[in-house]
Image (tube, rainbow, N blue to C red):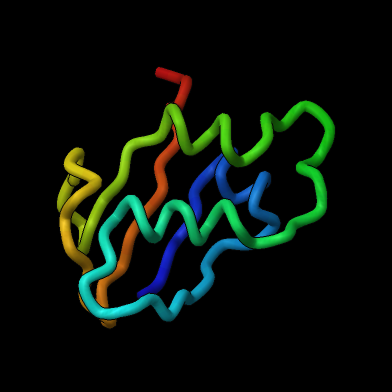
Length: 88
């Protein structure tokens, strides 16, 4: 499955997108644990760390909002991580 990072999540992760290979039956929660398990350099100055960003983010599964982290994922799914946005 692919994870796409947006805005502050992209800055904290240090990349726009990455792939994960999880066991069959893995959930959104499992994927988020895998995201956090990756060793990354610290985020740029002024950017919150990735765990903090994830705790406040919204998630899209194949472009549909998902709030239930127990949803089971498929190998070809795409999960977007959308931190809170500011602006008008």
